[in-house]
Every structure is written in structure tokens, then in C-alpha cells.
Length: 76
Image 1 (tube, rainbow, N blue to C red):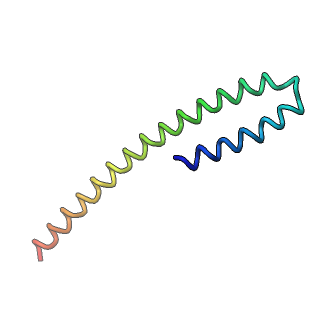
Image 2: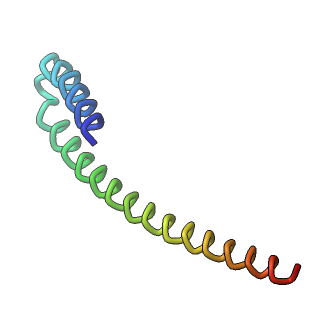
Image 3: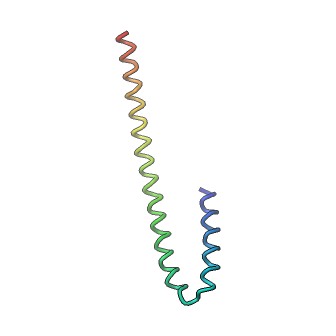
């Protein structure tokens, strides 16, 4: 988490340099970028939820695999 925050800060500094050159378009761009940042945060939260679902599915598959192995051993 710490590394991603550092990367974002570097990107913001680069964008500020561009804004200084074009003063007229500054305000419009800031509004758009703020919206994009909010969307990114929402996407990160969704990704976390998906990962949890995947972990649950993987755990269920592992349990099912163990049961199958036990059944095969009993047959032998």
C-alpha cells in the first residue's frame, strides 16, 4: 500500500508542471482528474471484494480436492 501511494504522489507533481504552462485549462482539468481519482478508489475496493470471493472459491476447491483424495484412498 505504501509503494502505490508514493507512485501517485510522483504523478501528481508531473501533472502540476503541465498545468502551470497552460493556465486557461487548469480548472477544467482539475475537476476531471478529481472524478477519476474517486473512480479509481472505488475500483480498488471492488478488486478487494473480488479477491475475497476468489479466496473463498479456492478454499472450497481445495476442500473438495481433499475429500476426493480421501474417497480414492478408501476405494483402494
